[in-house]
Image (cartoon, rainbow, N blue to C red):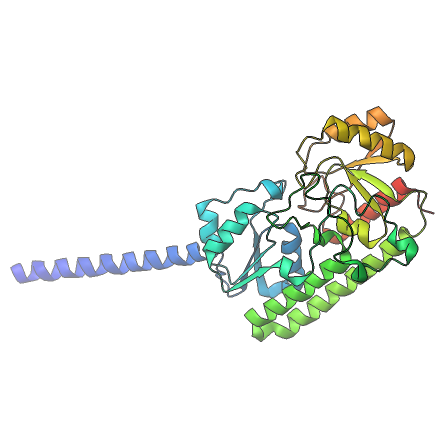
Length: 341
């Protein structure tokens, strides 16, 4: 009798332990998928924000599961990372970020300890840009503008204007230059090949296809902005320094790297003078930040307002469904504003 009760109790304990183990196994599988590990065997890639997410999706194709830390409509510079997100980052097979753009992400990356961690800043050359692309009137395209030869030259307005891009004072917005973005694509392709050698051929093929599209985009910008009435554009956010330098334009910004920062009265007065002297027609604002200062300047100077998207995220307000479409929309906006012929 006692022996039977003991056996029954042992059976119940064994069944309970088995059920608990099975339950834990299911929870672990679910937790792995949520935390960045791929439950279907795909390479788990975590990207810090949209431009890197786009690269991972385009190059990874069907072989990757891509998640992003910056959701649609969230201003990347202001992103806060939760402990849960840090935990999810640590489960990724590949982690893509851009140091200096999102301080919270930089700290979380250091804690995540992912083997295949890629700082996009290491895949190209960063430069310092401030309110203007150069010394105020650097029309490099008109002088046979060769971006590669000019890297490191020009004046550093970032610190003068208080536009601090991380500790280095360098501008992180490299994705807005199609040539530099292609360099990032090549680098991401190599990382995916290393992390998942079984599909290396596909990653290589997809990276080549994307860089081919970016070369066409670069040519469209060169052709579309070759002859214009003015080379100067005003924007709320100093995000277009690389683009301006690449195509021989002058960027004048109301704010610095932080699109929500307030300009000084002196800066607004200076922009009014620049607008008159350089025949500026349009003050550009972006989709993820307020257009208030752009409208104030436009009203004071009799200028139009328009959208020039820094492509830090895609929302239903974006002028396209992906990077390539929005960049084409940006080109059209610049052509109209600059008086392209």
